[in-house]
Length: 389
Image (cartoon, rainbow, N blue to C red):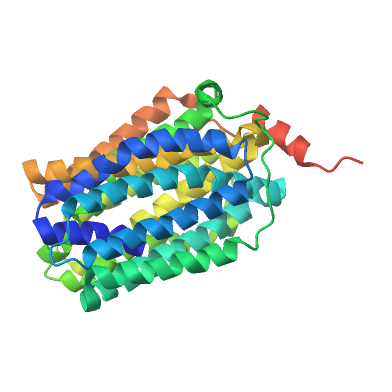
């Protein structure tokens, strides 16, 4: 998360351009799609723990390159874009294996709680990372931020080495395009899953204005609050996570996903209507809380209904659904700000999000009617998870 805010900060500082910051998302898009799909096939064929460790090492090396570039008298802009592409590819390879590990170590009826706890760790990092990153950037610049992040990667590698081996059970041969296509076919025929992907994509494409935060901080007269802007959503998400016990009693997950995504869009639109830093932070926290509610129920649907032999490939598609959206969202928000204004980018994106999510729920009714008590895929996995005497 420190590198996540340091790269756009450095690009904004060196160029002062909305478009230049938004192009980071363009650079990351193709590697994420290609390696996300292939990483999903690999996750069904290799030791998932080994894949996560290897890609974490690659991430540490990549951030080290950013560190060396930032120490130059004239840091190279092209290096930032190239490393952003590499990190996107690494993320595409890692995330499916990481996501596919959870159902293998957690009982079926504990997946909702486990998903919330996993989200707690992620959201805590998303709060601390940008906040610490903002302070480090203010005190020591991009080089200090990248250097600190390299150390955090080394710590995570050490911890991951203590996780037991989790071998895949899906593909007995070398992963190929055929295996990727099999996964895409499975997803296509699961319209409830397609609905979760569609809702998240729409919400992020239209209402993910994080690329504009460096400029919003300046307009609010509080450049020191950049880290707070990035962290505010994670604070709201953390509050939801800490109070998420109620999620275990919800069975109509699809409806919760749709309503939460609409609340996200509404909150982002309202950000564009206020000039109060405190209110902006509150609205971003509300948006983050809504996004976490959507994320918890998406995760529960995925973990409770997808068979293990398809989990890696579905995790690859899941990665695309929640990663491509933000990348395209950076492009859309930057372009809208350039053509209209910073404020109008927030407002228009939020409104389009609400409309788009409503239309997707209408077009894919199996998402809206999903109930884990009656869904055939959930019943099959529940039966599989029971110990056999």
